[in-house]
View 1 (cartoon, rainbow, N blue to C red):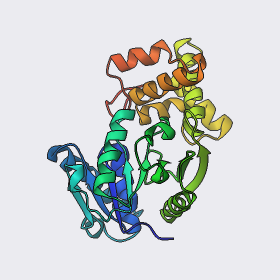
View 2 (cartoon, one colour; view 1 turned 30 degrees about the vertical axis):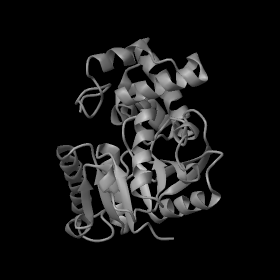
View 3 (tube, rainbow, N blue to C red; view 1 turned 90 degrees about the vertical axis):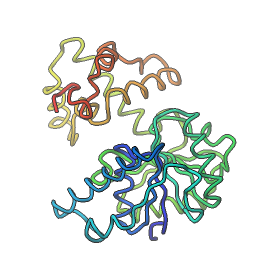
View 4 (cartoon, helix red, strand yellow; view 1 turned 180 degrees about the vertical axis):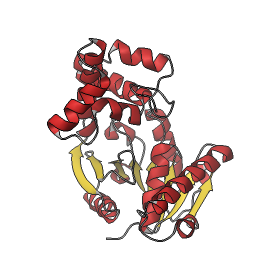
Length: 281
């Protein structure tokens, strides 16, 4: 199966830029949507930077960065998305009302598009309320998207089996490995990843070991490619905090965020994007 001819990516941050990168490299035309022209330009620049870095490393499939960038365009109003978009992937902040509003506007502009959410924890069932639910699916990419091989597809009761098969084929056409998960708080990956991440933070808080030694233990002892604290820095401490709070509400106190995580977020120590988290970047 090939990728869609035209893909819309809503949100030009780290995840959105990475998602745009992989679809461009696989041959799709990509329309990147942001809230205003300045953010749209910044998102397009992030995609360009990502493609050029991959080209410099000899890791860019599908053509030169310049050729791929010719298939990238931007809009700052969702109503301006082309009607022939086959797949729309939202990568906006983890706010259910915001995501539902985005998809409502996309559904109006792109009447046949599959509506795929990159959420790492929010309910796809709740997201689909008021939308064409048979076309709403969780399509959870991992950061950095051009490097990470996994895509987690999330089912809900109203999802069409044909749409699931189509999205799986598109993800596999990107060279990704797909797992399928029933809609449940945190799905599979966030639920397990956050559980380990919160415990690692508690261990730092309790003085059990340094972040470096905890991560080295998990990498060398369990074969993790990256330790849970460095991964928290990469994802963003604020993002991890939001997910943990959501899982604590849904699944109970074992996901309650440690005070150390709350304190770091309050100080602006958000990980790689701020230059400081559990490590200095």
